Image (cartoon, rainbow, N blue to C red; front, side, top):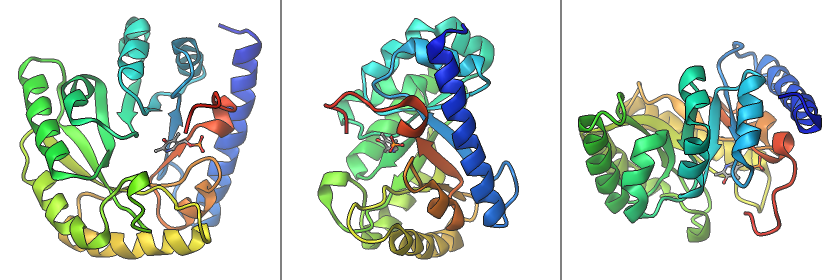
Length: 243
Ligand SMILES: *Cc1c(COP(=O)(O)O)cnc(C)c1O
């Protein structure tokens, strides 16, 4: 598909890829160290299809059933290209079974009941042949303790991480955070890096760090992000009801 929208997405994607490459270079990190997760929430399956055509393979979605519907709409293309989708938004416990069918990883795990539901769902999905690998889990850390934005506070992280690490069907991938709106991104990213250093002593293999969005990806890369979740800078503005 090469229409005006494809051209627009190609330009924006190119600009974000350039920004990311410059940030990785400035941080003295290796190219390929940081995954670009293109956040396609609120945008139609046709856009995902265009992005697959432009070579993108890693996508982030934040809502059920929007994600399931979208992926089903372009199922053949998804299978043929090997595109993968991560769940980056809040998961309702009752939606765990559906999410376990399509998600490579869930980035927003922050409570024990959700871990249980995802473990049961991922095990069932593995058994049913609906997925071939364990469900990746990033434990979301709250940097400012604001319950609105989700995440566990630092003190509660060890217990939740241990639960994930001990759950069949799940694989602990690392930590995720959303930068609080108040204060300097640098301050919060440094906090996150400090928390992560302690976490890595206990779980050296769970070295993923999902941090950084359209507005703060450079800072996140500087502080060790391995996955930036970028929506607006590639897709354009979301409808007004989005968050
Ligand atoms: C929507 C969303 C993003 C993308 O944010 P942009 O500012 O549009 O790049 C990243 N992470 C999460 C958890 C989101 O919900």
